[in-house]
Image 1 (cartoon, one colour):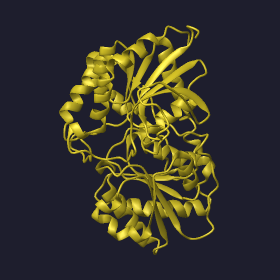
Image 2 (cartoon, helix red, strand yellow):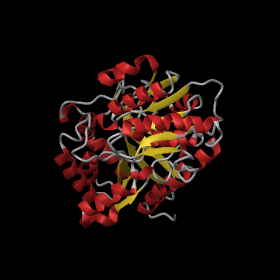
Image 3 (cartoon, helix red, strand yellow):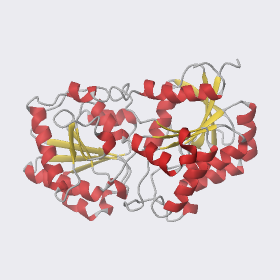
Image 4 (cartoon, helix red, strand yellow):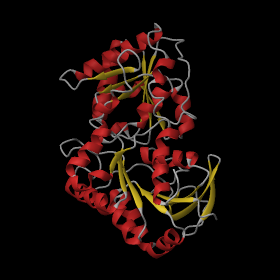
Length: 398
């Protein structure tokens, strides 16, 4: 191959061809779809489909793009599970696979002159030991006093330590919103020049503008994603319950994802209003969004919620609890409403959902104006930033 080609290796504990729902998986899928023609892409991950040779490099086609795939294991299910210990976590298990295959991976990456990208800070020492230049990304961060279902809250001190180590070892360190980036710069000032922001996006090839369906008087509210505690499903279900009362029962709640809402006692009151769609791929989610009216988000914190961008890209407004990074895309009266964190936020969010759909019916909110707010968040322009980073690491012209 020509020395002018840029070779990049991505690491992910799941299979992008599989059905796992999450920001990292969507990032990887879009990276494959949009990577430039002069980039040779290698993915080191797991095989969920069952059609690859484990431990060998396979030629794979996904969404019309070809790349190389080195699966380290076969997994028959990628449902989000929250472990009780570090040793049971997906990250730890994948790190063990990287160590077990250390010599093979090191030879492939060094002989192939690859640069790498990792999404978990825990993998940083392994990349450094292999002698491979790498770019670090972190997709979500939460304060230790916020509710979290996984190990991030329980072992916050280990998270801080691994973030510091990753900052020291990486070539560049991306987070997904400016507040996270500034927090990292202040926390790890010695490495502040490495930190930058690469926000998430909506794939506009899939999440296309669709006209509203307003042929009946039912309000259709949608949420897609995990049921982690920091997403505050308890708040979400209470909001849906109150909104349904305001709408005199003419409301449907649609959940897309592999979480179990029944784990939260607040779900009982809205179970009869709820459609559980389970895990869906991006194309299927887009089709569901086309039948919805408004998205809901009740998270305590987020990186940059891709679900919100996908709903807005489809022309649907979102009513969300206030997060600073959403101020530029959720504009009151145009693309939904941000709800302040006050004592009566549940009632405010319920009322805002009903009022938002009313404004849609009156023509005050349009799909065109809503989608226009997320046009700057195109994958082509945003991914171009990190593609340029790899070209610099390879000594190639930008």
